[in-house]
Image (cartoon, rainbow, N blue to C red; front, side):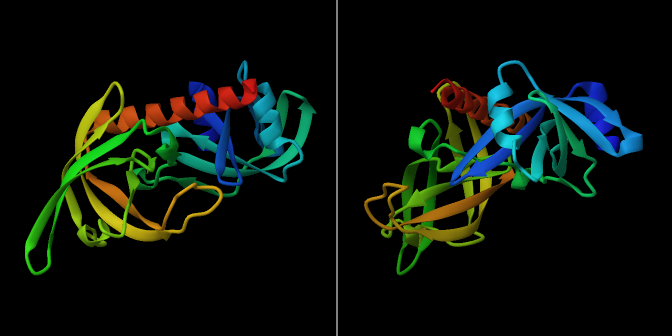
Length: 234
């Protein structure tokens, strides 16, 4: 209740989100008001988001909300729809606060708009070092992932540190340190269009400045909103 009341008072950004297949869709809403005696609250879409918000909420039992300001995730039961643009949700009994290393991720691999450049060494019979430039597969303010081939895989192990990695977008660059948290096989299929099996290297930031984290949070949500606008226009 305090979390929602605070977001209402500060007119914080609030997003409805849902996965359809492997694609994430979001719509931006505002908290209209609270009804503490009825244990519910009202949300409505911001201008231009009416259609996507309706698609994300209509005929659903549960509505997932994300409040970036507090990194809060809430799952609320849909109580009623007062009109096509006003939705009443029950006060959730549970709210999760997302750690930054587990922040909502954005898939960027298809666009090649985020590049990773770094050096990595491995010791086998001899010490070998290689310079990598990779398209970022997905990205959050807490971490990222990228794909490697079977030949490249020998350079990467869980818990390895990657020092002095450059992360670049068209208009921005930062240098971070990260740690490899997991390595997953990715088989080619009709959805990813990969020509052969690759491995996904999942990393978490161990050193990143606050301005860079804020930039990534803004970049991710602006990108999602732009993608959503393209979908709505189509």
